[in-house]
Image (cartoon, rainbow, N blue to C red; front, side, top):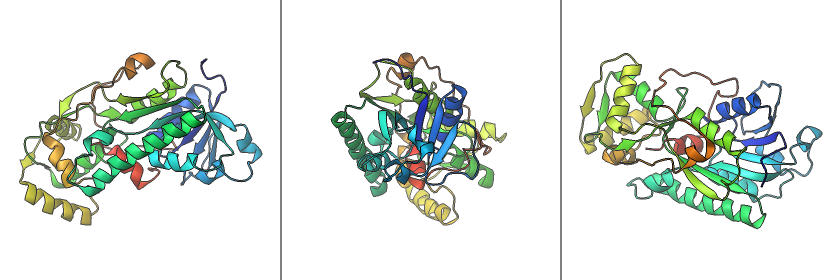
Length: 316
């Protein structure tokens, strides 16, 4: 199969955490983008056309969207949302599919939290739906399973840790926080998606995607303290007290993506290497450097596409 020659790409979940850098990289390489979002911004930029998800399967297609009639799709929305979209009679059809799944498929399957177990089940079912649809329609597909995505102060993991420290001056740990992590920046996930458009021999598989540096959960928290220019202050507390504290935080609007299941994993290794994705795509990722001040990647990176997107980005 030859590299993509058509310079049009459809991006689903274009206002998600990874959406901003994906759009920026695609525009930088000369692609024309159809950006799909349930909450399109009120601004536009040369090379980007915005539409709602339902316009992918509407009865009529406007001239502005017609040129994306058969083009590669990059899906950054929750994978089950992509499965729902593909189940409709499409007027815009993918020539190939690159989509984000998650290592939560593995890490949350045995969680004590029913909501987390449901996420793992939904991811597994969504992977089956998407790959079955692609096989039935002879569409090449590639799934990325990133772990612990962070960046721009918008994620629900590193950014939530920073918000807690900024407000209370300490961070609670259950156990010793020895569980290993490989945080990956949103721009690096975006680079993998964009690079995949230009490579052969990678289709028909699911690749784990993780950062270059392995560190413990406690070390990750310490890096956040340093980025905030504060001395590390970790308080180790019991599971019962932490469970009560999480309820109080949720009532105050803090740590909304945190759960007792996440706390239980502070001592659990979630060290998922990047398969051979980096080698295949010629990527080089960087060491973990937390961004603790919210910033927008560009005008399209103002908000997450939906709460479920944030939930599966919370890879702990």
